[in-house]
Image 1: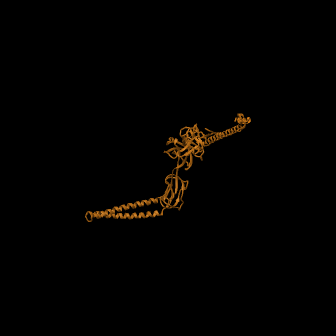
Image 2: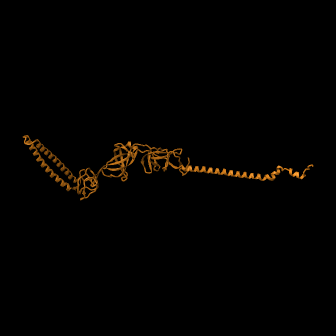
Length: 410
């Protein structure tokens, strides 16, 4: 049976294919819009992430820089002052008596009377006080009586020794008996010598009942009154009777800095001035020096003797001593608050041109109160830190404060 072709309409439906334009219009249009939307979202997210990362990196860098800047200390600087040298050296000095001595009793007793009071001018050997010594007097009487007894025994021993010596010549006594009598005589001589010594000791003690001045001067203190019990010696029970000072001349002790020690020679002239005598100058002369530098103060102890015939200068006073050193070396001074006190000794912190700190040991001269004289370790061109921190270290970097108050960062 012959096959008939299908109807025309059916064949068209089965064999019809969609064109590309029809495909994009029907099913492809929503897919393209989604891809575009996803791409835009991803681009926004990536951009936001990059921006956030850059912002955080910039903030971290700024914070690190700020922290580093804060960690570097800011300091204020001062330049050492250079002053013209002066050929006159002025130092503080203490006036002391040329000789000064406390007077103690050398015997026990009671004070009968004193003859010189405080402020009296006295001469050497002048009687100052009288002490009653009844115990010593009685001991002296007893010692003299004992001496007489010993002397009598000595006479008897001598007679016996001579008699036995004569008897020995005729063999009337043995040699042993003669030697015993001779030995007894020698012992009696020794006993007499001891008795004499005891008498002289007590006589000397009794002579101390009169107290005399050992040298000429001024009585600066009287510590006893009549009737007071007097104990001999300067021990715990002893009490000084008087204090005597020789005030002409006076000794003036000065601590001379090490840098000026070579100028301190015996015979160098000096002038002493005191605040209570304005405009007056008292001439003195260097009498002696210690010939050694004190390691604690780096100074030379120097004594200047000043005549004081009229007694105007008083021992214990404070004055200024002027020396003509003949030196015109410029002086360098810094404020006191620029110093560092550490185990290595006095130091200062100096800042170089690279804003680096360098710690320098210094040698201090005279103290002017607010400023100090620097004898070594510092130049006039150095930049010194004011009020340095105790934590400053060698080679540390610092910021230098401007005079107007701002910071000059290195």
